[in-house]
Image 1 (cartoon, helix red, strand yellow):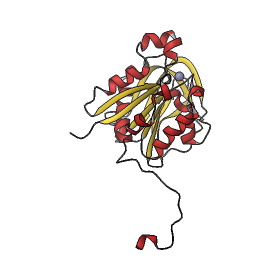
Image 2 (cartoon, rainbow, N blue to C red):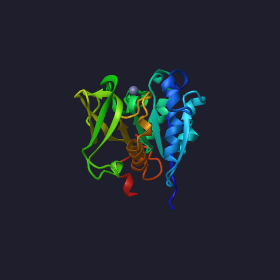
Image 3 (cartoon, helix red, strand yellow):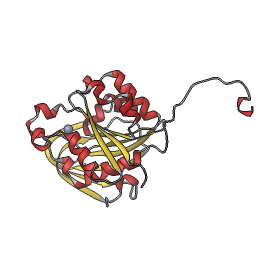
Image 4 (cartoon, rainbow, N blue to C red):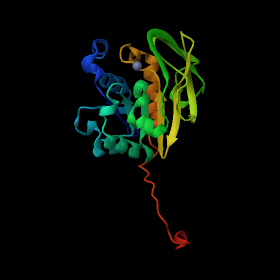
Length: 243
Ligand code: ZN
């Protein structure tokens, strides 16, 4: 079969050290849990990297060998080195796919890719979320019909201060009445970007089979079509391409 999709699951791995509920739900860390469910798929080869590793586990070599990077961060966005965020950005615009999960909306890499504040409303009272399909048949929504429900979540509400997505494939409604664009895609340079809202650290959101399905499908959607595409800025002489 074709080469497997090489996925690097990045986790800040900070709540895992200080938050009891997170430790209980994800004793090996959210990043390990995510990599494990991805690795049940024959076409995916997932590995993990965390903040505490040298260069946050995102060396040039690791990124060059990554088709799709998934990103989860929350309380340690500021600890991500600007130079590493820039390195990730350069890989995205040259073709690496990236999936930003939940509180990654405030990560250095996501806000850089968006160019907007990425603010939103939030409330943490374990309310119900219904995620409605707005692009039936989309590659990321294979196996998802009409809607799915997560019983206990942190609410995220509009206005979500992002640039207009290329595609809004899921819209959430919450018990409290707010709505949110929960599944959004963009292209940045040669790379594909997917933002997916679910993933709060104190609820078993990543246990949800539909959440797993969307993240898995998103890895397939976001994988680059070919080798990295490096854009250049130059000033060739007239008629150079005719020679
Ligand atoms: Zn959260």
